[in-house]
Length: 317
Image (cartoon, rainbow, N blue to C red; front, side):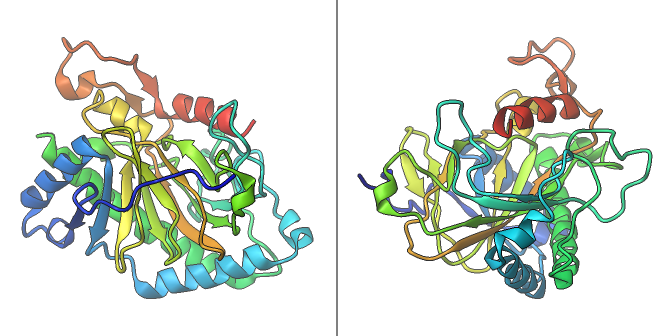
C-alpha cells in the first residue's frame, strides 16, 4: 500500500510568467510569446501579476472552508442541481470508467446574472444554489469568479496573439459563456487507501482554460513530456493556468492539454479555487478557423456545448 509515486518539482518544466505587461498593454507580444511556448510544451503555467486580489482569495478560502466543515445535513440542502450548481459530495465523480471515485468534494457556481433566455439553454448553465446557513459565502465566490474570468480573458488574448491571430479570436462568443467556478476540497488521504486512490484521479480538463488558485498544502501532480508524474507545488502569489481539451482541439493539438491528478499526502485538508472558462454553447470548435479551410483537422468540428455535455455525462453519471 502507499501513495502513487511522483518525482520532485522540476522548475524548468512549468514556467512562471508575469502577465502584468499583457494586462496593461506595455508588452503584450512579448508575454504572448512566452505563453505560446509554454502552451505548446507542457500546457501548465504559473501566472504572476494576475490581478486577482489577495482579499478576494482570502475571503473565498475562509468561507469555503466553513462550508466544507459544516455538517453534511447542511450541505445536502444545496446538493448539486441538474445544471451542475451546488454541492457535489465525495465519491460522486470519476475521471475514467475503471477508476475509483474521487475523494474530493466540490461546490459549483456560475455568474450572478443569467438572462432568462439562457436558463436551461445548456446542461451546465443554471441558477446558483447558495447555502442559507452561510450567507457570507456568496460575495467572495462571485468576486473570485469575476476576477479569475478577467485573468482568463487576458490569457486568451495572449494565446491568440501568440498564434498570430486577432487578439479577440478566442473571445468572439462570450456573451453567455458556459464558464463555471468551483471550490474543491480534498480531505486527508490515508496511505492505506493505496496507489489507485486519488483526491482527483488522472484527467485532462474538459473545456478551454482552467484558472486554479492552490492553497499552501500541495498535492497537484502533472504528467511531464516523458510520461512521468511530477509535483506542481504552490508558489506564493501565483495562479496555475492550464490548457483544456477544447483549446487543444481548437488549435489542432498545437496547445497541449496535459493529464494531472491530486494526491493529498499532507495530513491536512486541502482547498483549491477553480475557474473553468468556456465560451458560449454555440461556439464552433474547428481548427480550420485558425489554420484555413484546406486544413485537415485531427478531430471533427464540434460546438462547445455539445462537447461539454458529452464530457460531463461521462464523468458525473
